Image (cartoon, rainbow, N blue to C red; front, side, top):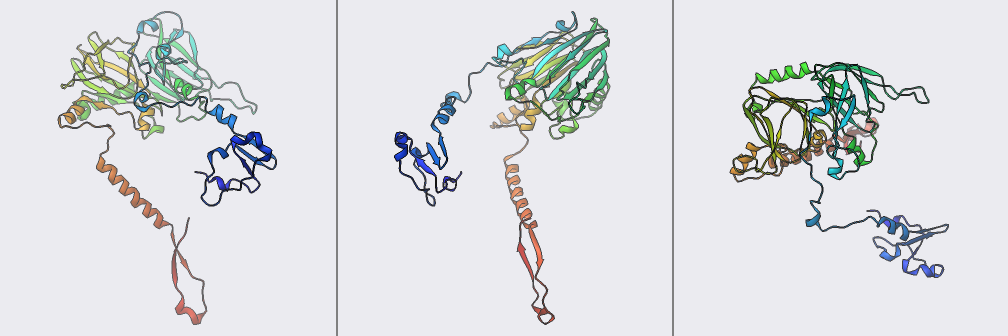
Length: 444
């Protein structure tokens, strides 16, 4: 809190707002002494020798948008929910070269294009021999997964500035079906060219970026938080095979997949500081039991035979089954939305492995320690033991207490490091026996 008495000069004239009409005759009030406070009505006008400031109009303007709500009725505001919508593969399987946005902003009552409040997803179709530009200059992260086809992508360098420097460094990569790449904030356009496609006469790309989040915050990113990163299909599948031959908790939960991380996101182990992605497989004739998380999932079905589907719902019963679920059938190349906080389970009734690639805004949630991913059997075990936890974050109350103690201990150590050994000035030989070494505390 600012001590107003230290900010008012001896020549300041503090006038009650009730006495504005008698300004010239208003009594001069001396600055308050010690801890005395000023009456509220004496803060309207402050007059110095050559300056007059009327705060009433500014205060009126500042108060225009102020709203005050009763907590119980406003803590969970009435907002449009995230729907279970589908972006079908047929959209990118025919037609001309184009971008096919998965824009549900009207449903969400959001005034800029988006698929979820933080992310925008689109299909990009490129007929063989053709090319197309994508441009999301205000996105901090863009992810591109190759659904089908082969080709190249170039980051253009843009026009030079006054110093002759280009906005971006021109770079080109080649890609094939199943590859994925992620780029940081890129001011210039990206050009995608299709050289061949195994079906449907053209390539298809699943493109997601976080420009809606930037629009909501009203900001423009200007720092590249990571380098362009390429994930080859062969490398991802090799890691899946490596996991397949190991034992661990993932097998207990019927999870066999790989998280796609970035060296610049070492703590969160995510695709970028906002994006998260997993290449997940569901073996034939198996069920992945329900789980939930606070992020919105925009799930791409990479491959699946008939009989593969996801069940979603807000509640589970005592057996861990979803109550009144919504069923979403998988089809290769199709994207569906999984709402935040909803329990969802994956079911493979076919005889072949099914693959799914969810992309989420969970990079941000993980950093905030709010992703809160939970698996149903873990929660049922706690519930049957008479416990309900508030967070799935992996730390106990005792660990918190220990952390506080360690913090205090570290503070004591740091304080001790500020103690320096200082020798008193040298004395004459006759006073040698009086020389003392003094320890005093100093700030470093």
